[in-house]
Each structure stands twice: as C-alpha cells, then as structure tokens.
Length: 94
Length: 359
Image (cartoon, each protein chain N blue to C red):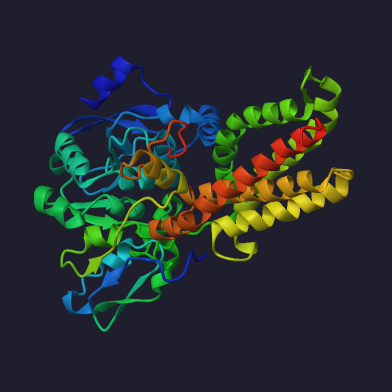
C-alpha cells in the first residue's frame, strides 16, 4: 500500500553514505537497499516519514521531516497551536 | 532486586519462578498465554483499558538462559511483552523491558519513551554487562524510530541489532544467523490487522453519536409550540440510521477494505465508501422517499463527508501514512468539511423555517 505521491520530505545524499546498511535495517517500508556498497532509494513514495533512518544514520546522509502522520494529532495541533502529539484523551494511541 | 519489587507488587501469573544471575535474581516468565492474557489482549484492543496495561520494567528470563544467551528488548505495554514472550517459546533468552508508560513499541519509540536514554538506563540498571558475557542486544525493528544504535553502543558497549518487525519472526531470524529477510523488515498491513484496529476508531466516534442522534430527533420533532414526538420518531429515525451507517462506513468499512477502494487519499476513500453505502441504504430501505430536495441535499452533502472525516482519522493507526501526506489532505479537506457542514446545517434550519411557514 502506498500513500500520496510526491509529498515525502525524505532527502538522501549518496555521497555522504558510508555503506553501513543501518537505513536498510531499520526502514519498515523498504525505501532503501544496498547497491555497490552504498544505500540507494528504491521508491521515495514508500516513505512514511517515521524517522528511523535519520536517527540511525551516523553520517547525516539522510534528512526527513518526521512526525506523527495522524489526522487527529495534526488537527489538535492546528487548534492548540502546539506540536502534533499522539496524546489524546480516549487512548487512541496505546 | 527485580524479584523483590515483584513480591511487593504481587507476583503476576506469567512469572513461573526465578533465576539466580551474577547481577541478582531475575523472574522467569512463561511463553504460553493464560486465559487472563487473552482477555487482557481483547480488552486492550477495544477500550482505554490499554492505557494502564503494563508490566514492571526490568530484566526477565525465558527458559534457563546463561551468559551467552540473547537479550531481547521490549516495551512495558503488556500486550507487546506478551507477544514477545510467546514468540520465544522453547528458547533460552533474556528479556529487557523498558519503561514506556505502558505504550507499545512503535508508538513509544515515536514519542521518545522507548528511546536511547531509557535503553541505556535499563542496560545499566539491570547490570547487563554482568549478566551476559557478549555485547549484543536485539531490539524490535520498529523501536529504531526512537533508538540510536550507535549512541547506545558508545555509552554501554552493547551493539544493537534491530530484529524483525514482528516478534513471531524471531525464531527464524535467530536460526538464519541473525539475518532478516525482506519480509521480516517490511511491515505488512493485512485485512485482519486493519480490522483489529477498528474498535478504537468506532469507540470515539460512537461517544459523540448520542449528540448527533439527539440533535436529529429534536430537529425532526421541533415545532414552534414544542416537540412533536411522532414527528421526532418518524422523520428522525431514518436519518439517525443513515448517520449510523456513515459512521460505520468511515470507521469500519473504509479501514477494512482500504486497498480495494480507489485513490490513495483517505478523505476520498472515505467519501466514496460513504456515498456508496448511503445510496445503497436509501435504495434498500426505501428511506427518504418523500423527502424534499433540501433534505436530500443536506443528507448527501453531510453524510459522505462524515465518513470521509472518520476515514481520515484512520491515518493515525495505519502502518504507512506519513505526516506530509496527512497535512496535505487536511489542508484541502478541513475547509471543505467546515463549509459543507455549515451549508448542510443552514439547509436543515431552512427546512424547518419553511415547514413553519416562516419563509
């Protein structure tokens, strides 16, 4: 299953990649694969902006504006003006 | 140490004994689920019971592990912990439970409670370097959102391996020499998984339902002289039924049939499902046969949109929707939701005013 096309903020610079393979190991959507001892992007539109790759890339080769992709959280943050958070009263995020 | 804490709190039924380690005694845990575990799973899937469904953080033993056994890390949401221990059946291993405020692995990692700092703290508190002779620790893959492997290694000496997404793949992962196949690292979202999540979509929607239903009854029965109960029922009930169908469409049918509904946008998916179900119900039950054009317009304007709104909420539960996409959907959908609801509301008022001969 794929979400909207051309919206992800994922950015990857192959020249900074050391080939450690952590991004391939952590991405739950299969966005990365190893090609010629470096990571390569398979399909950007698969990215769900969870941020696992960014947190585990020690060479700053990846950037993504990560956060919760939850409508309720984003609507709440629009209303309150705060950052989007999963903490809702009815325990939707357990 | 861990055992003492448990004794003070009353030993939970999944603890079957204790094991002496070089760093104190560790509780031994069962790899089978009891009736209470199944019950807990169901309750936590359908209600706010989940908010407090937790186990004590710390080190546990599965089987009779020794200094060479693997260490698996979990969250202290009991369902996460239960799924892990069930997957370790027949193995000898250590389980290190982090304090994630009884939130599951992926959500806790997103919030930062299943994070680098907490892991380092628990490794140190459990004196893991005294319990095992190796320096390897296996984490659920989805915890990588909150845990930086290199920082953990720098601080504790333990090398983090992110294991499979699903705990049930752990035995195969271990047998394969700690190697993941593509299937083990890519998250799936099959129909059953989607269905399991729908009670938590229906629940909050149904909490608000009585307000809508009550409002509809009052609208249907309201006369300048008071409320006419026969009108409230005969004119109100069909609309309440359609309202219920629209909630069901957005919070249940759309999530379950997700990949089979055209378009990638959840708002559009929900609207299409809502419109189809609305037309079907109107046909099948012969509702609104004599309704005037304003009522029909209001119903067809508002109800598919309600389904769309509820479907959009499901983005919070899926395994593949990202923030930028949801933001884009909201930017377009919210103004439409607000203006369409306003128009539908004005139409409903207009209908009453005409009924009373005021316009």
